[in-house]
Amino acid sequence: MRIVVIIVLFCPVLLAGNTCTDANGLIDYVSIYNIESRPKDYRPENNAAEYYQKAISLFVEAPDEIRNENLKVWPADLPDEKAQIIKQWIKRNDPALAHLSASAEKPFLWMERTSSDGSVLGILMPELAKMRNLADLLCYKAKLAAIEGKFNEAAEEICAVYKIGEHYTEPVTMVEQAVGTGFKSYAIETALTIMGEVKTTKKDRELLFDSLKKHIKEENFQPDIMVLRLIALDCLQRMYVLNEESRRILSETEARRQLAMLNLHAQGLVMLSGISAGEHYKSDFTGISYQQAEDLLLGGLEDLKKVTVLDAWQINEMINTENSVLQKIQKAHPVLNTLALTAVNIKLAAYERLRAQVYCLKIINAVLDFRETTGQLPVNSDELKNVSLLQKIPIDPFSGKKMKYERVNDDFTVYSYDIDFDDDNGKSRAFGDFMFGGQDGDLVVWPAKKLEDAAFKRK
Picture 1 (cartoon, rainbow, N blue to C red):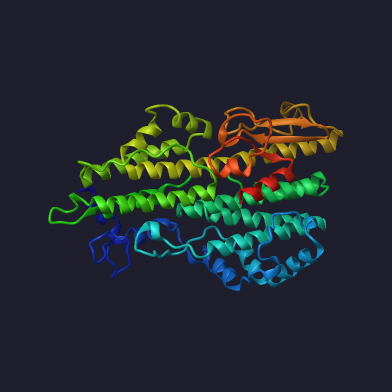
Picture 2 (spheres, helix red, strand yellow):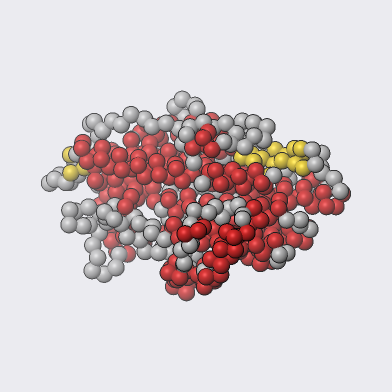
């Protein structure tokens, strides 16, 4: 059986004294996850984990007066009393933030993970809540620095948050990937909010944009599905009972319990990313052997890799085309259906939206440079290319067309079609539509104030 091959491949790299199976004969995929997620050229001195853990241990919780305060707002919009309390809170957290900034200088983050129940779905990530708080503080510090005209300091804080996001989107769990992509978006949103709220010169924007650009990887953003493979194999072995013929008899009750847990996990990821794309297919476990299920899952995940490299608009066509590659993947097995939905949702709601923001940021920076030089706004985005402020007009991953730029009175708007895949004329997505099934609205990246409001509502 193929499962034996997997044991042979992984057992030699486990630490001496450890075994690949637990007392119930189940393969320890959590240990395999820790091995596969660890960088091949691992060196302790290059690992950011120690700095993250130190930052988390030093973190001081917010005082009661501001515990529920939204740090995404512009500092000047807060009452003076609360703004002062936040400044004092940041001061108390300076030691923690110093360690967090130092972590951004390390090439990778790797932490050995444990599980609440021995399964891959039960892997614990206890530090993520505090990491969000620390990222909030760094972005707020960036805004305070920009208000004082210290754009170099602001750029350092923003870049640190983006780099933290990069650490959390390396081969790690899908939850971490969703959170990490959120950190990257938050860094870009903070830079844009500063550019919208503070009068900046081309030199100021170069500090903000060029520093951030060094960290942005321009290739197609896509989720790493290494963990999905381990989840698939782990769920599969728990769906079958062991006997002398080795995993031949399907446990119907346990199979449905595992699928329910997997769907719950996927639903949590949907809540993190904000949308749900595609549909669930009816579960059918009848007459399928362990080997057949394993072949379907591993083959389907290989096909899924090819899907996740596509642009959002191409994936949307697959979702809506009967018997497309994506639909065939989903119909192959109920576990594969849920894993496909998970990967597609993270791809569309997190990675592709981040890519749209990156492309919009380029246009916005070029427009502001154009206005500073000429005293007016460009008629269209092609004019930016004609004067060499843009080498090419970025393509919206949600439409396959040029990113939208329009002059609006004395200002301008830049936006993506977003997850409804049509042009809503720069109308920002409403909170209720975003979270509860409606998909009307665009991803408005400029004006920045609109972006800030939308970001707050999304959270």
